[in-house]
Length: 257
Image 1: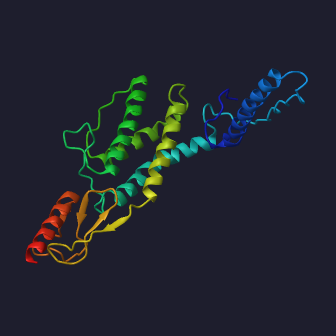
Image 2 (image 1 turned 180 degrees about the vertical axis):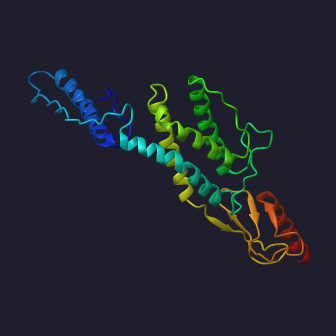
C-alpha cells in the first residue's frame, strides 16, 4: 500500500472534515485562552476540546488512486477538444483560426484572450514534457508550429507516458493537479459564451443594423452575409475604428442641420 494520500476528489470528504476540525481547534484555543485568563471565581466550565474526526484517507497507486489517475488521463485527452470549443466561441470570428503561432514562433501573438490562453497552456504542457524527457534521457526536438496542432502534439506525447509521469516522485502530484486545474479552467471558459452586443450605428456598406461585437473582443463584423458581396466581403473593423466612424457620422449629421 502506498504511503501517499491521493490528492484527488476521492479524499474531498476527509479533507473537508480535517479543515473543519482545524477551524474548530482554533476557536477552542481562543476559548481556552480566555478561560485561563479569567479569575477562578469567574470561570465557567472548561471549554471542551473538539473530538478528533475519524478520517479515512484514500492512498495513491502510488500517488493518485486509480479513479483519479483515470480522471487525469481523461482531462489531458479532453484539453484539446475543450480548447477548440473555447476558440470557436471566443476568438471573435465564429470559426477556428489556426494561423496564430505559439510564443516561440517569430509570428506575432494573437490579440484574442482565447488564443493567449491556448499559448499559455501549450507552454505549460511543453515545459513538463521537456523536463520529463530530460530526466529520462530522451532526445527532444522542440515543436514550433501552429498553436492548435502544437496542443494536439504535446498532449498526445504526454498521454503516451502518463503512467510514468504519475508514478514519478517529482512530477506526479504537481503535474496531475495542474492538468485537472487547467481542464476545469478551459472547460468553464468554453461553456461560457460571450455576450453579443448590437452596435447602434448601421453598417456603412450595406446600411443594415447588423454590426455586433462579442463582449471582450475588439473585432466588429457585419453579420449580413450579402454585405460586400461585390467588394471582397463584409465590413470588418476594430472598436476604435467604429467609434471614429460614428463620430464622423454625428459631425456630418450636425452640419446638415
